[in-house]
Amino acid sequence: MREIRIRFITTAGFVSWAIRRVTFSEFSHVELVTDAGTYIGAHSDGGVQERQSGYCAPLFERRYALPVTETQYRVAMAYARGMIGTPYNFKDIAGLLFHHNWSTPKRVICSMFVLQCFQAAGIQLLNVLPQYSNLVTPDALHLSPLLIGNCYFQTLAPK
Image 1 (cartoon, rainbow, N blue to C red):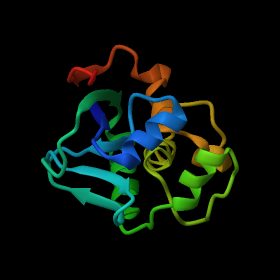
Image 2 (tube, one colour):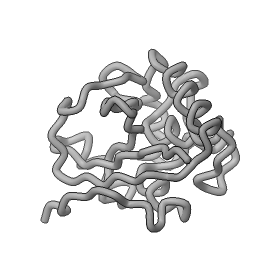
Image 3 (cartoon, rainbow, N blue to C red):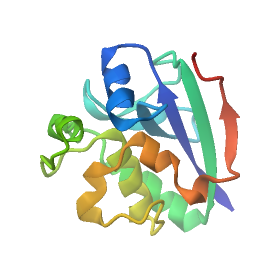
């Protein structure tokens, strides 16, 4: 049996603070962890990218390993890699701030990207219809019942 690993982080800076403040979250970003130790996620500075470990120094981090079949793993990771280059959706972030749905097709935010990777593999992390995936925040994704008992790494939250 394989596992898909997810990394939730909080970083320093105004954007991280604003995301956490508006979404009532302890996390400002979520991404997938690859077998090679790289991270695939949607970033405001470049859209969906695969980044090397150490690209940022999180203030707080929590990682989960969700057991999946080999097929589900391959499909989710192929979907993730196929999304590399997809632009970031700044309108979704503004929509979260102002409580409006301003989503733009063919653009993603981090939590929407991770949710869609799992949906591509037939795994429902949350009870969310695909057309509302842009409203999912890192905190909402972190509340998935499928993650319970699957945390394998965490650092202490900043005070």
